[in-house]
Amino acid sequence: MHPSTPNAELRFLGTGWSHGVPMLACDCPVCTGGHPRNRRRRPSVQVLSGGLTTVIDTGPDFKDQALTFGITRLDAVFITHEHADHVMGLDDVRRFTWKRAEPLPIYADAATLERLRIVYPYVTEVRVPGKAVPKIRFTLWDGPIEVAGVRYSRLDVPHAENMSCCGVLLESGGMKTAYLPDCNDLPGAVMDRIRGAEVIILNALRHNPHPAHLTLERSLELLTDLKPKRGYLTHMGCDFDYPALNPQLPPGIEMAYDGLAIPLGGV
Image 1 (tube, helix red, strand yellow):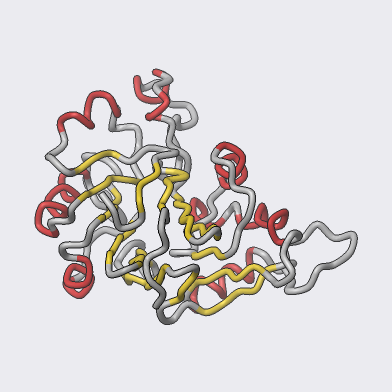
Image 2: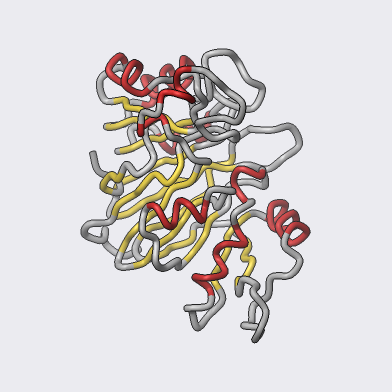
C-alpha cells in the first residue's frame, strides 16, 4: 500500500436517517427550527485523496450533496447495502461518468450488485451517444480495494433481516478510520478490527430502540469501549438537536454534520 497521502480528508455529505432532516410532515423543533447543523441529508461520505474523489453511498440526496459541497469529479463509489437511502441517487453519477475515459467502478458485494442491476438495468460500460445513462462498471467488492493510497475494506455488520450490509474500514499510512452508518450491533470480529482506531463513525438513529440501528446510548457505549482517538455520530433522526446535544457528549465524541471535513485517520 502507498504511504498516506498528504491532506487526505473525509467529508460528511449526509448525516441523517432514511427520512432526512427536516422530515416530511414533521413539526418538531429540530425539523422546523432551521439550525444549519440540524439539516441532515441521507447518509454518505466523500473521501478526497491524491486528487481523486471517492464516495461511500449515493442516496436520493446525492445531486444536492454534489452541488452543495462542490464535487466536480468522481473516481470510485462504494455501496454499503441496497436500501433506498444509500442507492437511489446512483443515476446522478452519469454526469461524472461522461467525463471519464473508463467506466466508473461501483463496488459492492454480490447480493447488493444483483439488486443494483435490477434497479438500474440501463447502465452500461460504454458511452452511448444520445443516451443519458451512466457509464459504470459494477465491480465485486470481496476484498480490500485501494484508491489513491487509501485501502477500503468491508466490515460486515447486522442491519436488516436477511440482507447483506457493511461498514467501511479506511486505512492510509497505518491509520484507521471506521465508518459504520447502518448496523444494529457490532460483531466481535469487527470490534477487534477497529478497536483503538484514530476515528470511528457510528450510527445513532434515536433514543428508542430500533431493530436495524443503534440508539444514541448504545453508540456511546460502543465508542467508550472501542476508545478511538475521535468518535463521530451519524445517521441521526430528528430526536437530536445539535446545539443542545453536542456539548453534552463525552469528551472526544461529536455529532457529525453535513459538510464537516476531517483529516483522514486524523483527529
